[in-house]
Amino acid sequence: MKKIINGKSYNTETATLVDAVSIASNVSENLYITKNGNCFLCGCVESNTKIKRLRRIKDNSGVFNRDIQAITKEEALAWCEKNSDTETIERHFSEIVEEA
Image 1 (spheres, rainbow, N blue to C red):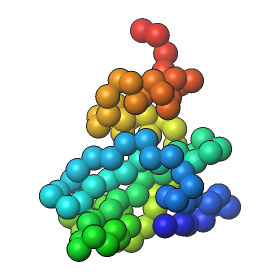
Image 2 (cartoon, rainbow, N blue to C red):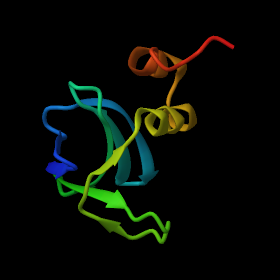
Image 3 (cartoon, helix red, strand yellow):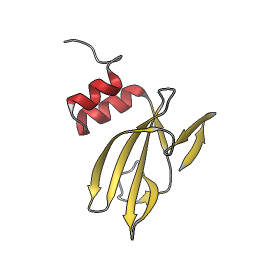
Image 4 (cartoon, helix red, strand yellow):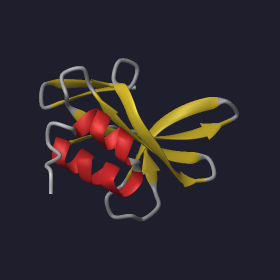
């Protein structure tokens, strides 16, 4: 899936998948980072081997729609702190993680 947001192209086919989190039995939320370091979330639901891209609506109503959501590196780091392991965080966000 590809979407242009504020003059930047976000493409799940060319970006690096950082991590994916299962939301339901066949639904996941995926964090990607582009070659230029821009981050975005995109969800997917698997149905009869066909993958559909979607995004959770912000009101947490449980409704999904087909979309990509651009997020900042700091928002992506916060998402990873909640959903990913330390190795994943250090691999993708070492430039903004500080020593305590």
